[in-house]
Length: 303
Length: 304
Image 1 (cartoon, rainbow over the protein chains, first blue to last red):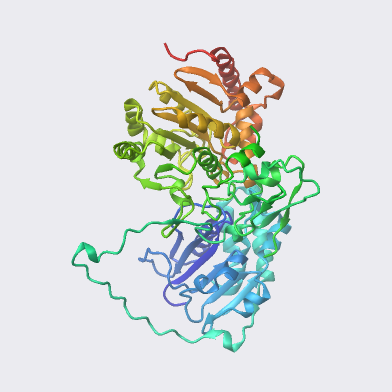
Image 2: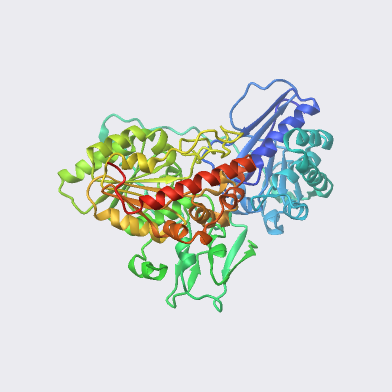
């Protein structure tokens, strides 16, 4: 390995990617790397929304302190992020880089386009978390098994140093669960063989944009005003892991679900039954918990 | 009033789905009901808070009434300016509200809030209280209760919670109320009442926050209800200095068997995991004492 090895994590708030990036930095330091960095993505904290975290690993001290723009490895912790927009997710990935994915669907894999020489690794982190009960506040901590997959894919850190990093990071009673998850992921990670046409040819650098000169206030663009619209940040239905389903036989049309929905994603149809807007329902489960007739059930959302 | 009736009365949604609030956000739930009660002719002034996040980024917004974001300490000042402007233009049917978090109310914004209350500016101030600076990842605020974990109080906060509603009542403003996002109909009624009163009105809303308080997103409403049923959070109104308990809080005073022990509320949240058993016991005693005093106060003037 020459120079700085850069890693970018993609996940959703609550899946532990910031914690995992810290653990990776400690593990890399234990491994003998002198320069290590763990950087959280700067922005408002939002559970369920897409977030990023970054790592830099080097044999020499690192003087660069920015976010990572051209990573050597991209780790995608949440499956739905890649299917949403794969080109933004792997933006800037370097030649001969690594792409580590959590159990992506086969149609996502077949439509994937990666830079020349990249290798793609897949592990089923969600099932590992469910199997070992690695959950905090109802969310699977998917980023921990991804550490094992990263170790297998890149061979940069050993399982032993990851284990030591986990020991220094967590309380004694939760160490075993986390180490088990990493081991399990390490042994179940497999390399995916892509077709030759899935490798991109290098993109020529784009020309710099010219900023128009302003001489008078009339040259200024009009005052920016935001217009109200549904889905102001996109279809938030993608945040959901479980989806509420209304059983019309049990429903008494009391509209408690409509009343308590924090998202206003429950409409009322002409018969007076609640109708959930799955485009925007974030799957918090408040309606499921508040329904007095238990007419709403939360089912695993297959997207 | 039941949910069905309100649906017929105010079916319009002003907080649009697909916004960037967290899953199970108590604050959007509260804002949704406040705007249902106030209607379309409302101007919102919002100092820095989670509200600045879920309103959305240019060119789209999730709130379908005018929404102005201002600096942390400037909420009430900006609202005063808007009230003055609307008065000068003769527009009498517009309600100006300030929608601020607990940090923007109890810590950073308290001086301009106090100033506007002293001038009795004609607007409604809403404080949605999620008991820490949640937007930036849970830092302690003046409104964080004792014992709660935040990133800046890793062993639990030592000081108690600042009682903003009583501080505002001491300004002798015409209307002060407390509410909770888990009681949307209570919030709806109080906002409707506040809308027709002239002068500064203050409504303090407890809004549970799943990421910051460390509980499952599906429990948002339940945790808020536990806060009220255990007596940790009281729902009341102070109208022209006269104190009235609201129905949910009166219910636990009149029927002690409906009361929930404070232990249930504390244990349901991860942020209180550092609180010891003897501290819970002491907290229960203080709440019992508080409720006794409150029972005597009900229906009486609060100040001399």
